[in-house]
Amino acid sequence: MAKAAGIHRSHFSRRFHRETGSSPVEKILEIRMAHARGLLAETSMPVGEVARCVGMSPKHFLKAFRKTCARTPGQYRREVRPIQADAT
Image (tube, rainbow, N blue to C red; front, side):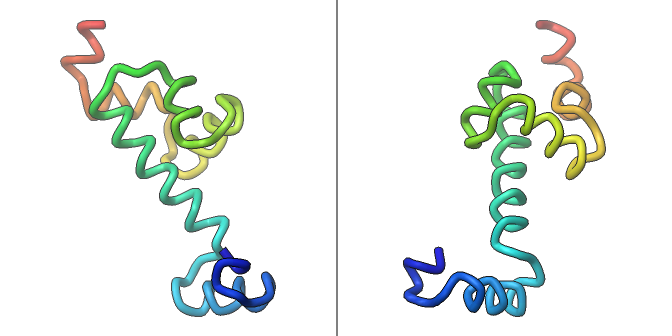
């Protein structure tokens, strides 16, 4: 992102944090987790496939999802799709 903006990476990170309140890495993770929550809620795609769709390994995805959402992807899916989750 810094290269695309034409500025040094550390300067970009400081400006990004000042403007958004989070680091570029945190913002990317936030976007990935929002996309993952949508996939978990709207599809019956396996969790490993959801991980790959958001650009993460299944192991890293599980850890990041639990940290940011305070539950596993399977628990989240059961909460937002209780009837569909029981039918599968």
